[in-house]
Image 1 (cartoon, rainbow, N blue to C red):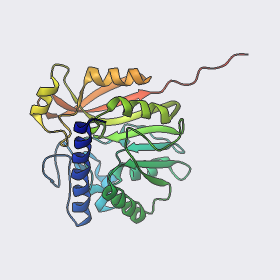
Image 2: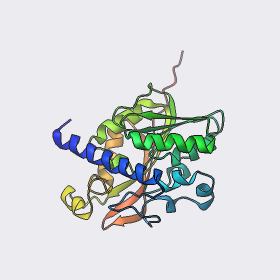
Image 3: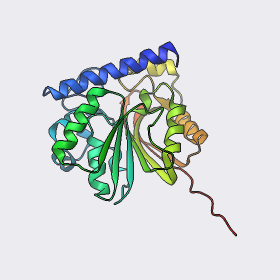
Image 4: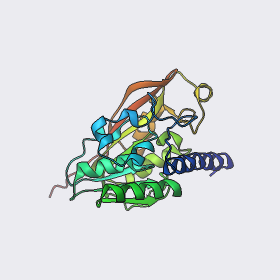
Length: 255
């Protein structure tokens, strides 16, 4: 990893560690330049009131995302779900409720402070079918072909090696598995320099892929049935989007 990539990762880690500590001390956080309680583009306001009411207040307060991936992942009873960049655990806890006691929801985060907050939130919620893992989304600490659904909420855009994220996501999914991701995506006409003018990397803007780049990255990793649907603008030419894709099922073997 280059020095610049290492520096960016540390900047992201420090930003989210600070957010976790702020929430732990009774504050709020969001994926923007300053913490706010309710934001029209980022945070817990993008979740249904019933979902927010069913979770610990600190899980809701720690929401940093640009969408609600659990609402689009079509989770079913008994499925195994992985949340990339799980933060305070809001999407893991919502997923755990949807997959039920026969399913399981994993959360992956690189920030000790967020993991501590997520564990506390899971304990308060009484969630027993959850597990939080420390690691990076570029090197997922799970075996291959063990996950039914991968979700993520405005985190992939923060990675400095998105090809590795897509490859790892493909690896851990079972054949026929799928992704349901909320992320920030740029218009194809915007250059990386123009994206950086609209917001910084840690603010979920500068590191965003374009629609074409996102699709190409997923296709290169092996995904099919790709759809990228913008939901609302987060900056000029930048959109929160729902990303869906499928890992092809294993080919049938004829005798």
